[in-house]
Image (cartoon, rainbow, N blue to C red; front, side, top):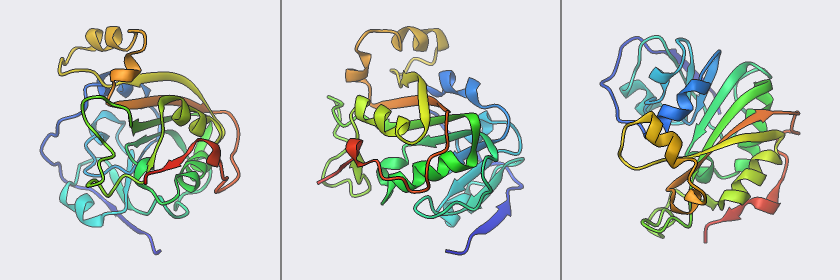
Length: 216
């Protein structure tokens, strides 16, 4: 697929962010890629010049933001970047939508610098208050438990150093830290957030099928 590039020049209205981003945003330093950025709502938390990547050009053009670059590209294909170009990569609620998350994660490894930071979020398939894998939701193709998701990330050359969980509607950073330190809170969390470091290169499109499940 031919890739399309354009720079954003105007700001969009503010958008609501998950409260867990109050804890995650401190990792956004250096050159940052938001892989699967959608409307680019996380970009204002990142340094100027950070890159938002998404397959939907219409959404990117509609939600232009000053001082950030948008790239139209498909995470199901080889990314249009040279290797080890980014310091930090965010991949929030994307892997479960992809035809081949193995390919995507191995290519994110390729474009992330050694010792760079990868942040991945996926839904909790066992969340007791909502079914993210309802048959009517056609977009979710894969699912992982907490430990399966962690293993899946680490099989692709990363070491997970920290995990976070989104918390109730209390916009308070201190409350977030307390919430994230409650034992077994992951069973009540709607999603899992993993912060990892790139330890080694991962062969492109490495198949790590032991910890990935297709939604049936």
